[in-house]
Image (cartoon, rainbow, N blue to C red; front, side):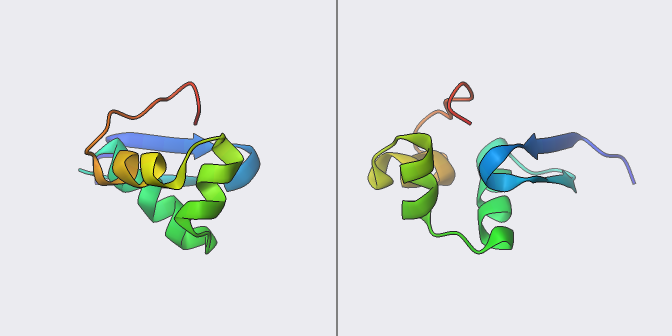
Length: 68
């Protein structure tokens, strides 16, 4: 299996996720769900409005990697 992307987020998501063929916004959602966090909790931790975070997670708005 080829690993296309390794996503490692410190702080809020103190873990690594190895996934293939997923967009960054999908990986963000998977990590959030795996950790059992709501979008609102993650948005607050990142200093974002929950609507903004939701749009980032759905791929409607461009991800701001400097925040993540």
